Image (cartoon, rainbow over all chains, first blue to last red; front, side, top):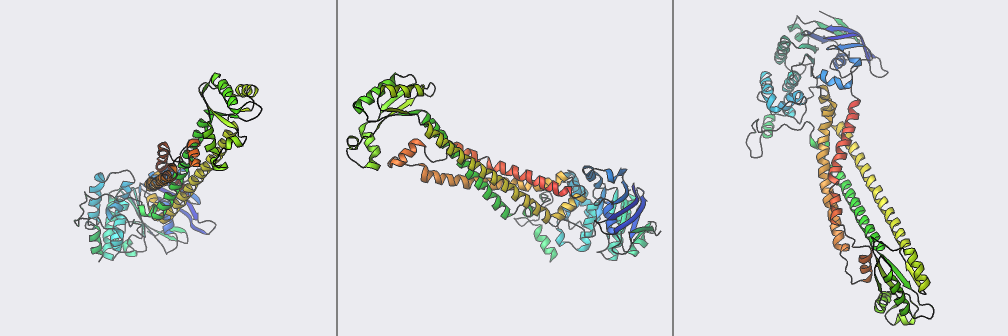
Length: 220
Length: 321
């Protein structure tokens, strides 16, 4: 589904952040991405959710060579990817409901068509009572769950999460991991960037990629 | 505390909880972040300038048309008191020739009383015509559909009536038309400048809105919104802003012209200059058709807003992959 081959990335004339990154992600797989801060985990995720183009190497996603794909065709690919940003990136002027429904709304969906699905998902992530609250009034954990709900509402083929348990207590972190595992069982490919070793320990079947000094290695 | 605030947010104006089916999705791009009050004021001022300029062009055009039709439908024969023939005989001879010419509707010699009254402001009351060798005028109305050969007529009058000179006002008309055209061009230039300034304001406003709402734009971009969809979120605000500013600007502009019409348009004939003004260039008042032209301002302002904001947003987004 996703193939990286000798991918390198540098910003401007600066040093190379990612060096010779090569890996293959099978559809329906589950991966952890770890490594010290500042080693390029978020940058790698940005390449995966098509926010950046590599300065060298080949990236193939969903059967398309990203280097040759025109800008007009990228939105269609992005809709197949759900992203949980480290800083949530919820829109403060929209309610939790509208934030979560955003991916469906931009695809032209009507509220009457998606309201049930959104409310059901919000109940599932424990935000059933906070449907019409605005993000500034949500706790860190609630924001995290809203961001995850927004990432999965469109039933993406690939879910990318950057430190999804960074702002929550261990119990909630475990609950969120169960949510990701459940999504993975339903067919979604999951890549989670995290520092949280206890989280990785809870799902020992998932391979762990370690990023250090711009190089990637498989730990398990 | 947070719960309380949330509780308040969830209430409608009547104090009851908003049920999901009653609530409407908020706009993805908040209006306040795109088109705030300062921008509304700036665009309104531009629309006001545009309205005043369009109205002025309409007014000048009307005056020029008035000049042209008035001047081209009338000529004047001037009878100078020369030679031994009396001026009255000269006038009679000239009127006879004029009435016999095809294409002349009427030839009315100015009476001595009218001539004296016309000169009164400059020469004072008295027996001016007898004391001074002042020419007399014959006002000639010509048939615009079948006008006479004015050159041949001028030659005939000069040959047969001593001291008769035909003035077809052509020099005066061309001078006035040239001046009017220059004024009109200046007004059109102002209109172009107003449009360009409005475009610049919208470009800057869109850039500011893009910078202020960068988070929203990036999130929309990342979740797969097409560039056109993101641009529409801005366009819709500039559409309403253009219409709103256009309507206010037009109302202010129309108000200005109404005040202008009230103070300068309705001049009476008591003052000889006003009477001459009314007779020659017409009333200095914007006609109803001129007011109708102002109605073009809101849609044009909205169009400029929509098109410019779309272009700016797409240009900004093209820098993102």
